[in-house]
Amino acid sequence: MVHDFIELCRSYPQIVIFMAIGIGYFIGKIKIFGFNLGSTAGVLLAALVVGQMNVQVPPLVKTISFALFIFTIGYKVGPQFFGALKKEGLNYIWISIFFAIVGLIVAIVLGKAFHFDSGTTAGLMAGALTQSSAIGTAEGAIKHLGVSSVQQATLMSNVAVAYAITYIFGTGGLIIFFKMVPKLMGVNLKQEAIKLEQEMSGGTALPQEPGLFSWQSRLNLRAFKVSNENANGKTVSQIEAMFPHEVAVENLKRDGKVTKPEEDTVIKLGDIVALVGGHDKLIDAKDLIGPPVEDKDAEDITGEILKICVLNKDAVGKTLGEISEKYGHGCFLKMLTRQGHELPLTKNTVLSKCDLLQVAGAQADVESFVKYLGYAERPTVKTDLVMVGWGCVFGTLLGIITIPLLGIPITLGVGGGVLVAGLVCGWLRSLRPTFGQIPGPTQWVFTDLGLNLFIACVGLVAAPRALHALQTTGIALFLAGVILTLVPHILSLFFGKFVLKLNPVLLFGALTGAGTITAALNALKEEADSPMPALGYTVPYAFGNVFLTVWGTVIVNIMR
Image (cartoon, rainbow, N blue to C red; front, side, top):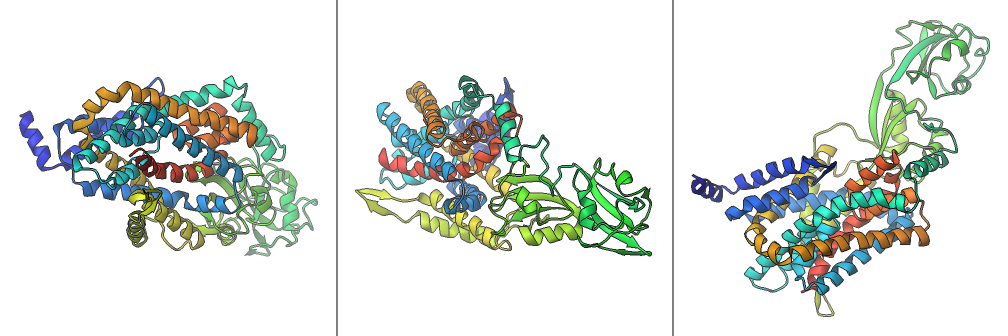
């Protein structure tokens, strides 16, 4: 029975691939003491076990899935990567470079000290620094070493095993690290986050409201009849300024005719005005303007909730407070995200290229705001597969280019080349928003499923040799992984604190970005009870993905 099933799997290898993914995702969700492995480690462990059936997996599946994953990673971080090169986040760039170089040096030193081969050292780096994409670049480099197919298979197997052994502490250990170190340093993350929020909000009490914007989960629309003498003769902008919170005059009904008022339109007694604001912000309207009335004509306003991608160079680099003074009348900001991470909404939060603002308000106001900020990310299921296809083609061609340097063949590898292609395509879309759209759900499929499909294939191929590799290097690998996980973070912590003098909340966020460890960022946000650490995360995350991915190729060639 068992033999028949194994033969069936060998005839249809897709069965074991999907088994590894299904079991791996399930394992990744299991929480032990509040910690879970995550899907990637879960899939790899499942593949190493299921792969004991010695099923041959078509290599093309692994190649295509990795290409989709790494291209989309580059596409997501491209605008932030090139934007930071120009003028933004210089300190964050330095800490990313410092972290990456220290990580590379420590990995090579440990590889030499423990007598690891090139595959084991590359897997050590990929797992200890939680950079799964380095597995792909390392495997690509191994193919160009000029060794036999048997040696290639052994080295690739060692990459997967080393990654599996070191990834657990690389994730779980860092979560504990970022929970303990602030306390050891005498830093109260919650208090520091509150201070930073207040500083970025102009010293105002929380929750912050930078003039134009408001943070309501829903908006309210009510009509009021102007009967208060204090409102008579005032302009629309003066009426709005009478309220302690953001309120917008959207419609004006006079002599039975409804119009859209301008800021300098004068309000008179007997007018009916339609106000839009947070559900608890119109309470003062009765005393300031007059009694509420039911008027379907005045209240006939089409609302819209829209995500706007910030592309206008005049908006990039400005704070929310600055753009609130001139633009977006009647718009209410509900959320600000960067690379999928929610950022704090404060007066001094600086907008970066390709930030997404979720805005609610009257349709006319929201559309006007779109024209200023950039491009409306309207709901769609369409993906520009022309860009994806050709991007992977040119990235592959770029990756196979080899330049000899001091006897060492220097190459990006297919993975590195496709990553560069993704970076460029993401950056080009920030210049021309009608080009190359990949909706959020599709990005998730390409990155999450693409990565784990690749990891499943890696584990299944490596499984037959995994037990031997585990027995010979298991303990040494685990110890080396602990060292490699902690040393770059500790040294970068001192570099950021004493050399760059970064705010501790932003510094810890930057370290999680440089190490591309989102789980630790989430732990930081929980500890700080604030999204503020995400401000330091995004630029280092963009650079960390590039540097650590390329290190897979570098390590294999240095340790050859």
